[in-house]
Image (cartoon, rainbow over all chains, first blue to last red; front, side):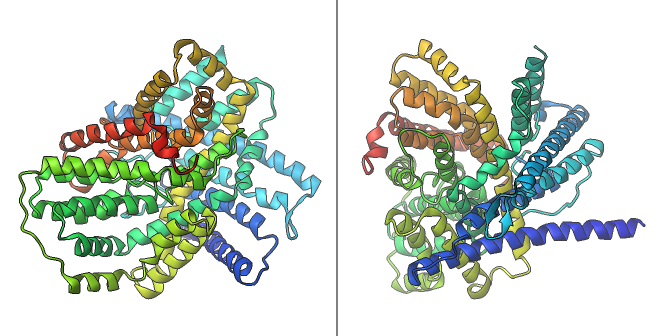
Length: 174
Length: 427
């Protein structure tokens, strides 16, 4: 049972990575193709610019999901160094819990918003409706909400502990 | 009054490490809720991120920067600069400054410069006879030096935020990049002056120019040589829009790193992309949610109230700039640059315009101060990164950077009170 759950867990994490890479590479290729077409062939893909701007949103929201994997969201955090470890951990439980609740509220209301857009049926580009472009917003907030909820319950549980040698974490401290 | 209490609680939790996007979101949610606005407005505001074509530059330049710092670009860059400038007295300082500025501009000042270049430059500086403390200070300080040069991400973010504000005067990213040129050179120049003075006793044996080594170094880096030209030439020469330069740069770096230098394998690509996009995602999320908060603040006429209040206490533009300097320094020491931009720019820009300060000049002032904030004790981010990277106690890093802090502070004051330096090429 546990093994299978772990397998599903890893599969989902891999899917997240795959999607991120897919959005990123599509953005690079689409933008480059657009430049080539415009400068050398005097033409262009007429929906490319809109699609690119939406891809940025998708890359951003997927990236934000990644940041919540390892608690790498930007924090100010100037006081917690002065606290005893136990008190600090308990305060962090509170901050993560509030974060989870806030994300849940935003997810709930963005679903409501997308329902209106769905009924409107506006087209964003090519044949893609606007609501489909927006769906990443509630999705990312649901995922982040769940992750922060886990941190609130089990503070030292890291969903995907991986060494990071390129960049020190943003909440970097001694 | 219970809303006030709640806001207070959130702000206190922010100081104890609540994720910043959640802090901003809670404030926006409380604001909208208390004025009876449907909360789905938050999603609308986040979706406004798709209104700005310029934002595409953010993930693409960041990816390119991460790929470059993953490979051996930093080695090649230092080797070439040394081969070309080795005959100069104090060449290593000059090499360090220019290499760091270039690298920081490309990697968006997230502390990578210290990690990637510091490890190369610090031992080299020491073996050239520079004193330990000076070398440490130089490397830590240089880690934030290229902030005003293209394709600096903070400058792009500043442009995006200001463009969302519907000012009478347009602010384009190209103007900002041109405005940042002289201030950047000034900062490099004052550090070179200070270094010459601080190390006046060091007599280094003259190294004659070695043509063979220069050619070899040039050959090794030949695939990366076009990059600065692509970006700087493209932007300064008006050939590409910034987001286009970003796309071409990302594609080009991907190709040379994976297929030509072979320093990154296809298998490593997902991990590098993940690391880079995690930063981008964090920034974009904060940008998106702060669009919502700003919108609420403007609805509630907070910037106007703020202006009235400040106007009562500060009468001349010069005093305003002085307070701005002090405020931004403190801000830069406790907040990372992206959060500081996103939170403060919507409030400060209307104020500054009220005092007759050009929004482009303001952007340069803002970032120049933030750059100093990176190594302002006690909590400047680069101080911690340097302490970790060079395995030195943080107090050693404080001592090493203090003289540089004052030297650059002088430069920042010149940049602040002499607008012509920033605006001469555009106005």
